[in-house]
Length: 155
Image 1 (spheres, rainbow, N blue to C red):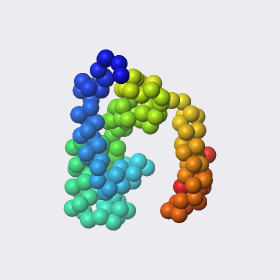
Image 2: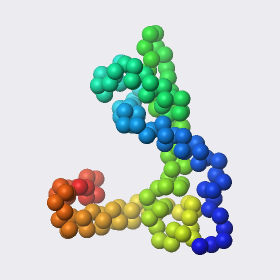
Image 3: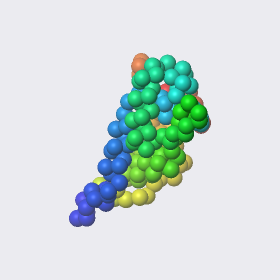
Image 4: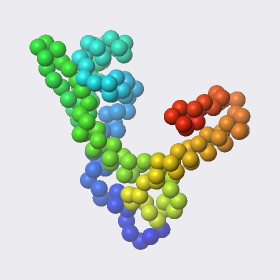
């Protein structure tokens, strides 16, 4: 290991990432984010589509809003929520910089810990395909047959 400390040690954005991940660490909140990825919606639509109570929907939407993931737009008596794309991009950029599969999976990661050097998409796809092919060849009884999505085998 090299004598230099990883840059992630003192990166002031790491606590921001941790807080953002905490806000997302709940299944209903992830479902809300997924639902809102299609565009702005009112709370009543979120309740109906996700089959959760008004109180629970309001709680989860408020947690996501306070964390920075959602924007609110009031229209009469309706509250419409949408994803704050700038915040989502910032969180995603921090995540990719330190925890992206391509960054973590590359060779010699100890000496290059926390450096920005992402693998090319095709190389990542090749690694994923090879991994799925090994699982499929093993014929594990817990796995469904391998199918393909977007050219990448999936289980």
